[in-house]
Length: 303
Image (cartoon, rainbow, N blue to C red; front, side):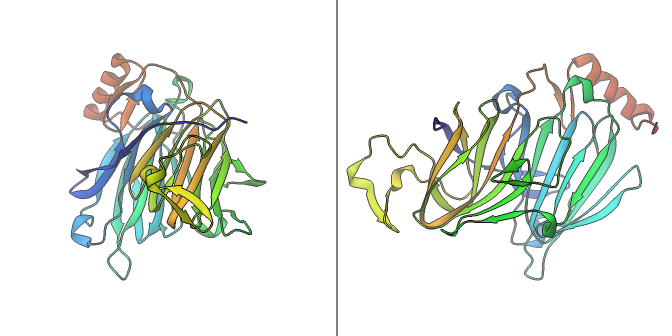
């Protein structure tokens, strides 16, 4: 077994989307080959309603899948096909936009005014760009959870892991999407198919994702729950960690433990023509989509 090296770490950057929602973007609207099959990842955790209540009014989607994971608060959603619903803390929605929908998402805070969650965009291959739109709404109670004796907790949202299979299925990128907590000082390894591109996103606590066997800087070593931790390597809140090739990711949790998303997917390796939430393979297809938006033929009839 080989440990995946860390290729880059970066902090999610503040930005604004929708009608004025403050969020942090870990990646997106740059080189689509870098994270293929994933296109964008947003962290929309906010503590004040004024930073999110204007939401994301009606907007189009085509050629992608959007994955919304709510930690706290709620998100009301609706679309041009008549679908309506509310995602609450712990819930997940995997939306396959396919041939196209008009969609809106309106965040609502909890009693403390908090609105916490994430949205990931995954690309669709050319063969599925114009497939019929599809929703998979999953309640938090239906997401399998693995509890290890050492206190490690893994929620399996998508894919199969440690004998559990997540409730979302039939996704083009054959992804793995895990919500993981590792207690203070614990060192864990998580297997990932070598054919998949992988990243971690830390959203609570801190951890080192470096290979534990590599040389260490003596001056920054410390003992945490009986484990040596190089605090120079710790990745904290809102840090994106990208990995190279290998079949395992190793993590050593920092002094307060760590909670992070671990996401992997099979690269599509196709050309990308991209304009906002519309992602096609060629500029001609993109121009056709924009023309259809203008003339009212963007939404395709159900077959």
